[in-house]
Image (cartoon, rainbow, N blue to C red; front, side, top):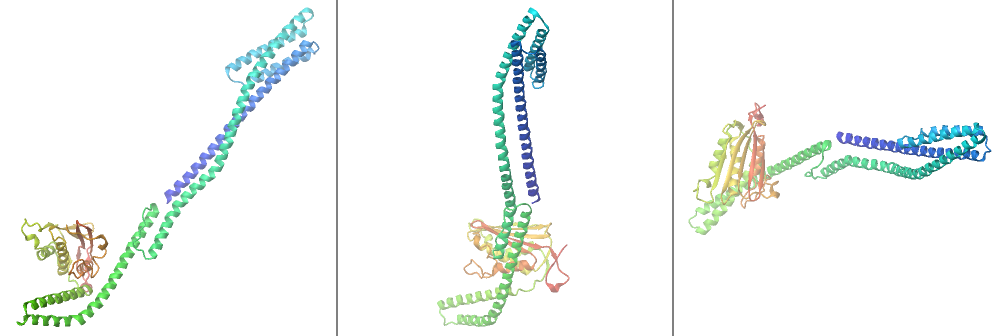
Length: 486
């Protein structure tokens, strides 16, 4: 945010500075053009005035009626006007021409002076020379005026064109400048209000109950706010799920208690009665098979009731020093029978052990951990009916002071839409499953202060990852919760 504000202020300052500098340059250039044009016109006027004076002096000489004192005064003034021309011209060619003209005017003045002082025939001689010089000066001045007049007209046209262009440019700057500032202001305002609208929309989505909505593509301070919002949404969703699970546990507890009271005892009587009937010698073999199937279903119902009671009212963990690698080995012994088939059997499951032999002992309930691993291993075996690879890895995370157990198979995998349901009670994809195994597994792991997560790709396999803290038994054993090592 601060960076954007600084960039915006810098951009506005640069634009203002550039426009101001450009306007100053334009004004200075235009003023210089006008000044040069005025000087050129002044030179033109000076030349014409000089020509008028020469013509008047020449007219007085030719008529012989003029006062020679005034004629001499006029010729002296012509010399002064020639001197003024040197103040306006700077090129060497012009200076040479003016110097030549000045010399001619001096010669003209000297001849007129002789005419005024001479008498008799000499006076007429000097007069003719003065008139001849005057005609040549008039001719040369006319040529200079004619030559410079066309040039001055062209320069005036160019100067006026530049002035017109400058007017247009100033108009464009004065009209587009505020427009540009307005556009940039809108861009910067949008860069600020856009993230605010995204955050406001996100809070409304969250308020409406959409806990899966997340904010993306925000940067800077807004990105940090978005990150905090996403973390809050994750926390709210987790708390909501925990509340749902707590409610499910409460319902399961009430349901389990009722089932145990209302169903368990009559069910036991039914099972005993069917077992007695099955032993009767008068029962046909076909009826015996029917009774056996019924007894198995009763036992399945009893198992479901038992798992339901274990989930709703689990026994208090008994924490003892535990070696995770040993517990996994024991669970493998009970759960994996297929790997002991002949290596030539295409349906054999290959077990890959990658155990960390330096794992520290942890405080845990060994029977409950064995239940966890046994359940996950059996699920992995069931997922590979045509054989595959079962990989088990244990490791110690020193930074988090925890033990990690990964159990991965190359089975059928889990569909994406089922990933959020597999730890819920009664959810199962097995024809005869109870849907309580993974729910109980998750609960036991959490009671040990750990967590469990799963990754799966349909057709490639599934991997469960369990993280358990390295703990020691709390001095307050009544709490039943392990105390973390600092």
